[in-house]
Length: 381
Image (tube, rainbow, N blue to C red; front, side, top):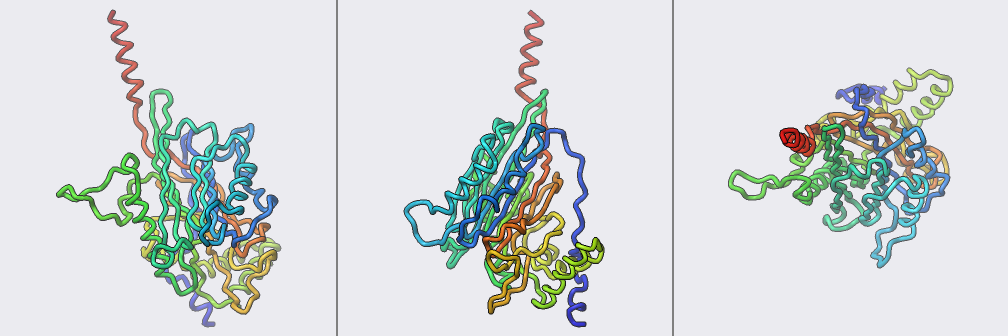
């Protein structure tokens, strides 16, 4: 039929698991969360999945945890921080525990970002900085945009220095099915803006041959990073009829409950082939050279609040994977990429990912070398 015809693999966007690379024993582990809160407070039980990121006695867990939220507050002007923003920060600290230290906390309208660091690696943090870029009406309204965190870490051990430069962005892009180009433009504006605001000691300013500052288009920033994560309510939709998508979701659930996993995967791929974000990446229109963990979870938007039912309002929005975590890295292992279906207070479901990151640059420790020279001088005496 017509729907089966349009779900054929027009572009090579079938998701395949990213093969695990062999990592150094001292690689970093990061967990990233994105959660559209729909201007409502969540329960502590719904946020209990934060606990899975904690390091236990075995030291298995996350070194860094980035929690990003959208629609945390309404965007009316306010003199003081909203109570839902305080609630998000309080629960984050409570769930992660006293061994995690907030490195960066920032808000932009309804967008919230908090980056936590485990005390084990706190001494490796060389610098951290924050910037934000607005993409709302007239590029001044704070209902859309992103917050960026620039992070540089360096570890010195046994005469070897390892370092990584990382960029984390959490954002909220243009809404509605038809606005793919607007979402792509939002991404370009955000990356360009974050390049322009990058501290000079984090990213050496790019200059033209005549010495004048070069125009920022984001490409220099992306190429200069060892790891980039871009997460949020990116708002890309599925270009298929509502009835077809719902039928596929029902069949996926049935097949999984009967352990017919291959049939379930085939149905997931039919939907994902019409996912606007995967098509955008495959065509090179935005998010150049970005990757994503394999999507095995069902669409995270739009639900009737407090239920597992997809939108039953008169708008009947097509279920879609609006909430995503993308990355651009040469040394990454995806350990987990999932949604949290039990967190039902919002019309979105939270999504989280956990990743191993290899170090970007490895050099001999110059301070150690100087120490060696002093030792040789002492021996001469």
